[in-house]
Length: 121
Image (cartoon, rainbow, N blue to C red; front, side, top):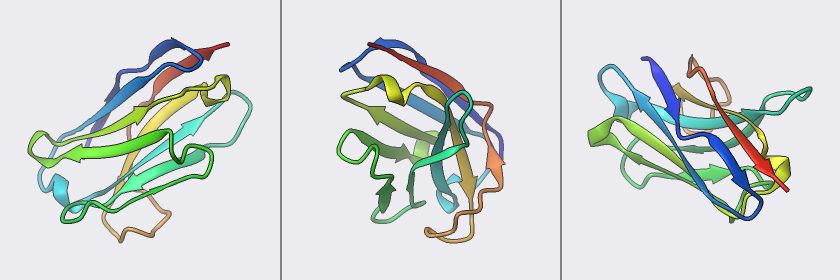
């Protein structure tokens, strides 16, 4: 599967952005989709994930819980990351990723190229 992120940009602190990740290939609903981010000089950080279908389970890192929401539209092969109340420390390159193991697995097989999010103070 190929993943392409979009929607990044420059936003003021307190603002919002919605990132999209479009997937190619079949059986998109079979993939657990994750969002990650990497700030300059820092390791890649888990942001959140969503299950493939059914109840659309979600799980978030503490740093974004209550501010970020992950959703997906399997008919459009797209997963979204709605980011509200953005902070300068949210500045990073954001990546989406996909895996088919199970909802709790930390291993992801497919990655997008990333989209830059910059939050100004």
